[in-house]
Length: 354
Image (tube, rainbow, N blue to C red):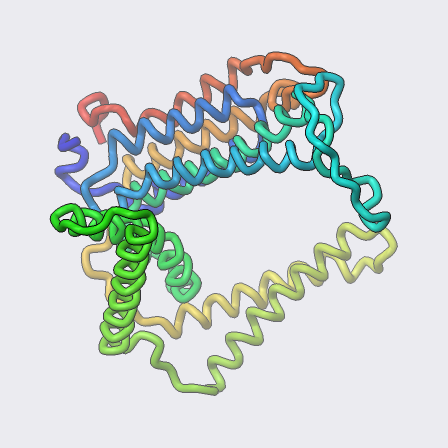
């Protein structure tokens, strides 16, 4: 959609990730299929309205396919493990397990309660996958990497490359299939698999080698091996993480001495912050045309935060509908209205003054 929003400048990729992660957090807090279906619809609507023709934007439908597969697998697993319930739908031949697996049954009576519980769990995980797919389709991974803080640059590089692999594979599959459509040849299943998988893997390897050579020519990853500053940075980060973990254990354990709680946790935070500062000082990057964070970005991230807060504030009885006994899930009106706020980024830019 080429409106004034997309023509002027792209939205900061961090805003899209905050928007999607808050929706994913809301999805993780409920198994109500009505709310989860609403989150999926909102994510799909915003992606359809705001995605561009960039390569990373074409993989959203595959995230939907993976989400549907997760639901099917979850329900199938519940069918195989034969969950108990009064409403028996059908009976499968039960497989006897050894005594070491006592308490676990394989096949047997399949109840509607067990299938519904599996559907609820699978739908929650599928919704979170769809939210991540929406962020991957909307956010420019290159701009996201450029916007990462210096202290988290190496970790951010790994994360950005990880979330970019799936859209690139989707693009490669589409490119190979378009090329094969122009040719004639055998159409057997084995031939199609060989003619798709091999070119895609070869293309991925070639692009990886090209990227590695390009990064090496620009000096990425070149640092003095075994330098004192690098060892000090690693020691500070490890000590900080360990201090926070030990401090958390001291706070949670009532039998531990007083000094093992808050003092150790504060010391861990201070040492960890020092490690992040040292790590950030090692990375020197140019800031050519950085993406600004203005009102539009605050609005996009804020709508996701409002949606998550509305879900977290709802009653647990409405967020987790009962599967045993069977009942139709109720729609929490307040949570649903809060989720509808997250659809604001899909509205035309003319409705607001950005």
